Amino acid sequence: MRDKNTVAVAIVLIVLLFLITPISICATSSYEHVYYGYVPPTTNIPQVAELIKGESVNYTVPEGVAILDVVGLDDGTYIEIWDIYTNVKIASDIVNKFEKKFFYIPAGSFFKLVSSKRVAALLCGGFDVFESDSEVVGGTSTFYPAVTGGFRGREFIFVAAPPFYGYAYHIDKIGHNFNLLALEKVDFTLSDSIEGWSTSGRLEQRGSFSILLQARRKITDYQNGAGRDVVFHLTTTGDVVVCCSALDDFIAVPALTGGYVGKTFYVAANQPVKGQEGRSISFIILPLEECKVTVYNLDLEILAEKTFTSSDVANINYWFHSLGTTGRFKIIVQSTGDICFMVGQTTGIADIKYLGDDITFIGARPDQEIRFYAPTMAILFAPEDLTATIDGSTVQMRKDEFRLIESGPHTVKANKHIIVQILASGSAWDDWGSYLIEPLDLDITFNIPDKFLEKAQDITTIIYTASATTIIAIAAILLIMRRRSRRSLRTKNI
Image (cartoon, rainbow, N blue to C red; front, side, top):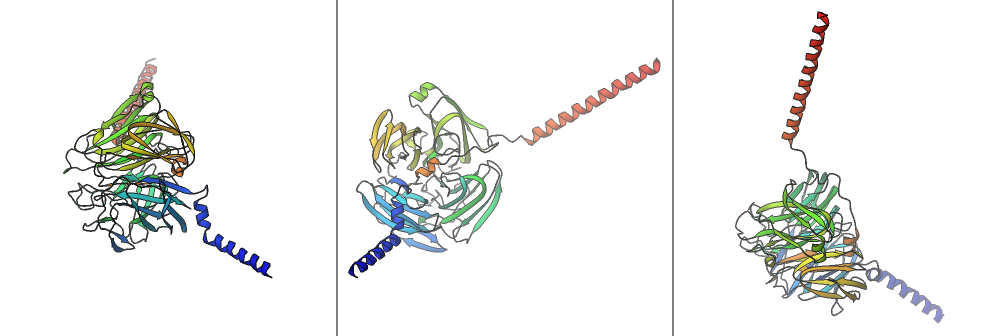
């Protein structure tokens, strides 16, 4: 009887253990979703506030931390956050669809977020990142990840990134933290997660829609963004990309074909019309093969062009170019060969050394080479045991290991997925942030939509061409009638 009772108790314990910890087992399996990050030596975040289900929530942020917002894309998503240097668990929790939970990550931490299902994770820090005061530049530039992976898709669930200016009535300074870029003709619906606010519309191919959405803010400021919550839901009938564009920032731009290596890119860039002297929108392009690169505005008018040679590729040369432009506009880049593309704003001087505070992420699939410029430094993370070649030197890395890479242009290639966090030219690290990326964001691939780079023919040209064709047709008819008339006269004379 005792043996039977022992077996019965053991079975119950095993069942209970399975019921209690199945998600934890999933979170540490080969099917986990893993996101890496590093918190620079940031300044302290002040008291902040945000709208949660229509109610304002205020809280005091401890000193010496950044904030990691995690948004659930599916119900019952188990997450863990680990310090990968000390191998200490920072936090664990369950997050549901449309739910946001935030965590404090100490400055100087090298960490990873593992989850049983895909999530949207935004890391932000610095005293001014949630600032909306007219005299201070805050916010961050980042792409919003799609529910299905990568940064292109038809559904997005996200927490709105902080804008650089939160007063919606100040049209020449407004910071749009939502820029919808249509890759084909689409209908879209954007709403907050509690469906207390929504908007919809239709965009033509390469069309865009921008708006200021409700985001976390400094407690003493007023943020006039749309929505009754900081979590939003976007659905579209065609493929789009979505980004937040702030000031003094620096971002690696995903290719429209997936990942960060490609031939076609599309990004929004903001520059105030007035009140921000000495700032300039600038970009960096690094070629992976011989190619000609053309940079367009939204109307496919050429802004800049450059040809890269085999020598440029061999020497890891890059192209830094300042557009010196004010206003809100869109940049489209087309290359005849594979490139990596980065864009940002300089402060005071249009020089690569004066890119503002920010972090950004780039990554590569197995056996794919990536190139990037690190204004300050970069960190290479290994999601798996791998062999990597960094600027010609081969290194072995274990899972969760990281390596620091100095400033300058770099080329990296590995036999497994790699994630790289790049630090811009931060001096005080007062306002910085980015969405984290995972291997799935690198694996998903897309085709360029049909006619994406075809310039619409100007209506005056169409009218002119039609008029010219009509005139030629009438002239031809008159000529034929004249010839027939002459023939008729000749016949009568005979």
